[in-house]
Image (cartoon, rainbow, N blue to C red):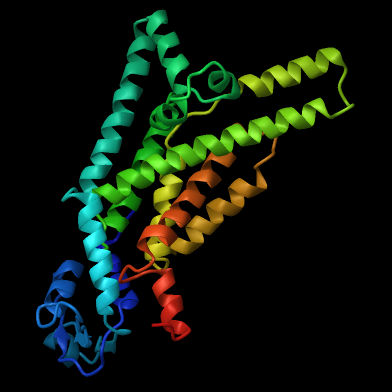
Length: 327
């Protein structure tokens, strides 16, 4: 799903540079981190990317890739961003953070299916009581379910799709210098809380609207109210949406491939598409998806970017600041 060459080109496209620099030659095997490291070698406080060309053979063939990049990191942005990244991440990479999240989800998924296949009813009930988030579980005092529900799956396809998506977005985030596993783990926890909190608020609003409605008789009201009160949700989709929102804020033009679609789609289009889809079906009685949890995770990702990573060397905030002439 992720094209590494496109990642490198997107990083180059989003990074501003001085036009007075020496040409920076890229070979097809040059990584984005090598580009940034070489650009910072002369003056770490004001790295300079200048112009770049692919290689001499490309020049001779007449398909020159010589192009100017935007402008360099401002020293105060680069220093703030790198320092905060090291401080929060503690040397943990985004890739390592993904495997931590994957291990937690896999352990819960494995425990569920072990209990199901062995007909261990006690373990099944224990899993349900501690991984499903609902108004009933919250009122009963199982507050930890707002976290544990984000690491639990029952359906194999749900688990597989979420883990593949999370892997893709963690890989994109990990390409940006200064963002390590600490940022990913903090965002995952925040997205889990926001996703579960959004789901609970939506169910509470539904319950309030039922009580104020005159459309139901006593029996119908009791049935609908009970169904809403005990409606539960689980899954890492809120975390996936949070990380995807952060990746979109950092590299909005990054092209990714979706399933069997043969062309790359800009990341901003994918994220906005999911947001529109979730918003459209937010109050649908026919949908069995916790769309409010998705939207809660997405808002957490955007908020995390604005709060902690808006001064990163790439991203929407920096592009807007450059476009409107802010220093």
